[in-house]
Image 1 (cartoon, helix red, strand yellow):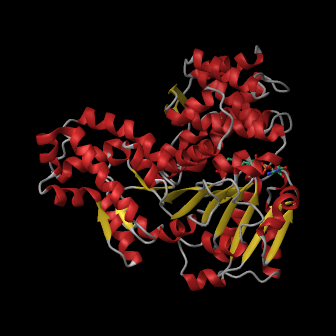
Image 2 (image 1 turned 90 degrees about the vertical axis):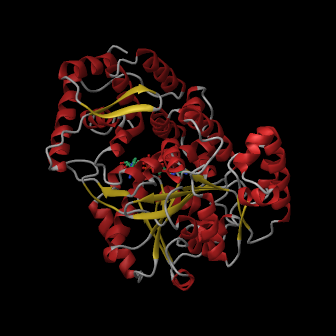
Length: 522
Ligand SMILES: NC(=O)c1ccc[n+]([C@@H]2O[C@H](COP(=O)([O-])OP(=O)(O)OC[C@H]3O[C@@H](n4cnc5c(N)ncnc54)[C@H](O)[C@@H]3O)[C@@H](O)[C@H]2O)c1
């Protein structure tokens, strides 16, 4: 309710030159009175029976190009869900509170929207059903979004079975995100992949002309490079964080220039977070900006770094010190690519899943807390969580800071140990333990510690003293507060419970010292 299904269906139908059907309106016509009256006279059970019969009829008759807006409660029926599953199902995702306000503002008589608490409960109960059924999730309340996403939606049926799509939107751009096993298979035609990747922005003519130029690292290129088929050129860098530099960026820019890349073409970033950040930065700056498609191949990249548009390189003085915001044209994540990832890399990357689960709570947290193996659903949920935050605050002015959970101290630990002792994810895991100690969440801290150990991740600080970590944290804080330029002092992200995190928490130095010390006595 309140997500704008009828409007979105109308927009899509118009773009397709078809007519949208609305099950609620058709049911009212068939009954000869309003749904509210039907509820009052015959009760919900009878209403649901009639609704099910009509919706099954509509879904049975629907062919290619048909557009149906389904009543929000119709998917409570298992038979409706089975029938809808044969079609492309789009879920318009709306925040419960916003939905309530919109429904009230409409002033329509809706039998299931009379009381706020009941409404919010209903929303929470139905949400998992919608998510389960949806092939694609679009943000509600953005006029025209369904029509803009239409080319990507149309390509979705040609993607490997089980592929799901999210529509990412941020202040500076919107793009499709696909998560599906087999997206990087040899038989996914590269021209289609390229065309698809630009589908949300470019006209069909531009898409047909745009050539793909790839940036990858040596390891990933050897494993997956040939799967991309026809590419205008590939620039390969050496793997590792030490190559996320301006020198590598210059090498890439110059290779692209030599290969004749123009603004009509696009870049494909094939690899982990290092390749993604570097290629994204090159795409943001080459000829003042060309589109970039991310094909992330590590856990870090598939659950975090490929989304949100932060790109950049390291300086010898500090990590990620030079960069730009440049939203991707598309992200295609194939979880099968993670099978070749070394265990140590996989586990370190899994810490970003843990962090995201603490921020998101709900289904993602339950999956992580019960030790579920990383699934495409969890990757999708991580992407969804991050994208919802970025949609609210692309440039880190507020809520996006929650994504730094565990990172402030994690970075300090990395710096204090000279970036050699711990992988980034391992240091973030230690940072999470410090954040939970400071949050006064002893039980949760123990739970997280257990999960880290299960993933063979470190739970104690080695090769650096508490003072060295505090010094590094103080340095980080100084450089960050100066860089914001508005007197804002960035502080820690703390956890009240899974799903409830607060950013900007000032912490007394003594408390911080004690919390870091806990890592030494671990
Ligand atoms: N932009 C953002 O929002 C953001 C967010 C988080 C992290 N990051 C950045 O991400 C980087 C870390 O990313 P990462 O952990 O992916 O590191 P990475 O890109 O260095 O990849 C790790 C290693 O795995 C190899 N590899 C990648 N995919 C593989 C595969 N499928 N099979 C086998 N080997 C594979 C790589 O060659 C590399 O040696 C850091 O630079 C960090 O700053 C950026």
